[in-house]
Length: 273
Image (cartoon, rainbow, N blue to C red; front, side, top):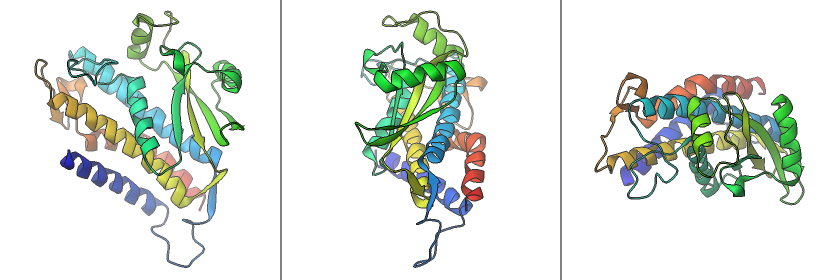
């Protein structure tokens, strides 16, 4: 476990370094610098992290779960139980990321909700239910200030982007809806933050906390595989399930995410300097 912790720290520190470089490096002491000045509205930051999440979840859903199932890999909502040899379903991958963020010092909230959730506790109510109806019409994000929690809140459409999403929800014994189709708005990811604007340093911390969460849940999945007793273990390396019974290392997985998503994030960070 100590080795796992060190690897997570190394990977996320690398992410942090890349982002700082894009922002012009570590500011000089005493200067009015980007790291301290308010640089982004909370809406901009939540949109940035939501885009990173879209890419990460789509990659995990299609390239790991979808292609993995074709190779005989198993994914289950009870994947953490000792007698279940499987990986996390996409929604549980997101929950793992959210748990990691919640344990971090970054005051970023993340959860997934729907009007037809598998888990009744994830059903939207009140203001969020109203805004989700709007999201289903045009798939545009909704922003509002949650007076009860005193949190700036952003909701983004969560689409059925892969066959694995559709079949899992349609066939689930607790499903409240069994006719999902590819492209349907299945729910919305909801992000929350207490401040209306963030500095560069705070923005990077938000992005880094999300990246760290993805590494932690993915490495937890690989640790689960290492403990398999009855199931065939995929080879962990540079290859993906599309090539056979393989899974990428955390570094390879995160590097693919970075190549797909981080360029746009970097442009937004640099453009606002």
